[in-house]
Length: 236
Image (cartoon, rainbow, N blue to C red):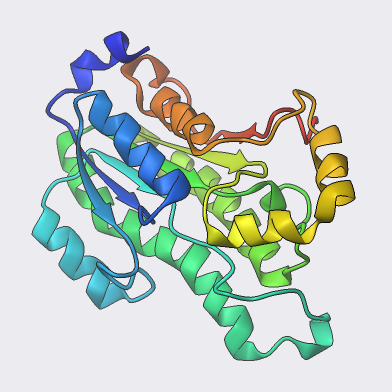
């Protein structure tokens, strides 16, 4: 498909959450297609802070493609709902949903001005079903990203901007998912893989290929959609 992407040469992209795993693979895939990629992770800018986000995008300049991949569980594990503090809830919502809002708000004016844009939000299977780790705020924020995708597609489509979403299944992509995988033990691991139609875990590149599809010129009539890239774990 890379050959079809040559028309995108000269485009600029911002990919958030590129420290490792899925974000790094998305950035590398877009770069392979001739797109100039600006990488940002929490060491580069605090994407939950509007002033930091605005400063980052002001420095970057016009952006044609935005991939909102930053997120995660903010170091949290499952606790019963009655034990969840305000701070714990807010931290997870901020890193997943608020960051997506802030970055989208920052790029929208330039995309509107140029009449072209691609925004891809990386949600999670937790946003369409439940969090495997039982983190309430994570499932809620990831579902929020899907709703935000629909609303932004509806609002920005007239300006030549598409907004789509990917809900990855279980991907061994960073220290958090590695720790989660190891915690299942041999039996739990076999059960998880057994629930995936193609019988394998996902790779960061599997998700990156989905981003490549959504940003392609050929995908200009696709917007507001959420695709599960999960090997057939959630079939609906």
